[in-house]
Image 1 (cartoon, rainbow, N blue to C red):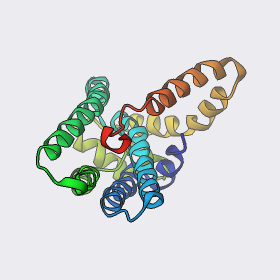
Image 2: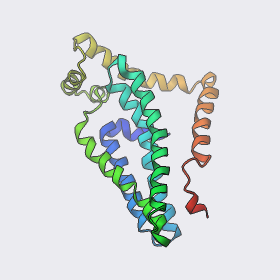
Image 3: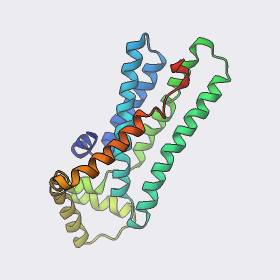
Length: 207
């Protein structure tokens, strides 16, 4: 719920880098955890990284992708979350067949360091959000990003981006109205239930 705050302050891409580092630290910390408290701490750090990137991911896609691709790419993002969970179970199965003995759980929790490193490397190839750049009055950079996505740049489109960035506060005010509280509560509750239901648990750790 709070991932949008650093995302607005530092930008989507820089926030992704922080989340990637959190995932890397979490994976390595869990693999070399020296006691139960350390394991819980590093798992918590990993949860912050996953949660933050899951919130900012669709936001970044919606702000960078052309309109005709936006819905499909956000949907693909959600599909990739499920695919990632499937690959995690497959990875655990493969590690389980390699007979690592008592250290098997360390390997399972340390494997995520590999995609975390890849995630950090791929960040060097993506642009900043044009909406965030406009919000920070970096119009020229926003135009360059929009050219990368092959969108036609006009003075009207620049004014439109500026207008949308200024509407953010009014949108937050509308969301705080009493008539919108129930839908927001239901949306947040569904997200919490999805996380607290244990879909990402590792059976080995529960034995």
